[in-house]
Length: 425
Image (tube, rainbow, N blue to C red):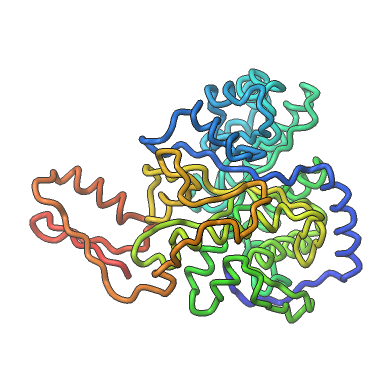
């Protein structure tokens, strides 16, 4: 979370209570069942048919895909699972420029399976505004036009119960702490976020947010209380501008988003958490990535989201927040830091990494005790990678780029003779 100081832009408490009331009405019909993200970046995962059976056995209410996989969509036919499908990032610009291509995408990926498969969300891209190359920035300005094209295609088919949106990371916010200072980044605020919020508001869709308390905590473990990040409810923080009291970091993050939307004139767009979770393992310099913390966070999250009546957040009390946990499986082919491959509720064999009840009916005392994590403090020191003997240079480069490349936070250097050294900074 970006704790950048910003001049507060406040909206009166009366406006928030009106907003809360309206949202309470509009969210009343939204199921509070927990969803799961079903990624497939692994070469050792259960088959799609086995995976769907696992999702059903876990009593999830929704499943979110990172594509529109035909086999999986067929397998989901006749189930009671609400389904979210995704337009790939590399198709956004073409769909934005052509209603014909948008119609074709909907025909191929929705009409083939709907309504037998309960498709409820079409997400255009994934964290599009978190990529900053020249080509990526072109995608920024195609994002909302592509969303409009997909919505037009659905309307032409008289499909009204599928919401169109796009999942965004918390880095779309320039300031998040305290929550009342929440504003969008200046490079996207007026050019992308304002038209997006107008679209979401007009179509009564959701702001899909990927919200991980792990990342702000692990970046500042000495200044953010771990219990606060794990939603334990035993720490209190007060926003000095609003007087609102927070008992967990997730509520702070969500309310910062609400303030940011309000500052652009859209205080009542509903929020849906498209990803959240906690890693069970990671690299030595990724503190707090352990089974105990992952189980604690996800159990507390489920308890919060499944409470009746809904808890909401301090800015929006009593409002349902639909939520997808990340992720179904540990995915061994994801690149980046070690945590990237250890977010699963299940391991690659389909076995639970820890006990979890997605219905929220199981009390905390009913779970078997887990040993507390031993890596909850920052690692101090350097870590060096040593290349195996007998490995070809091309293969070695590929392996080192995977383990130590861009986004891992590590420094890699090639010495004379092809020797490689790598250390954490």
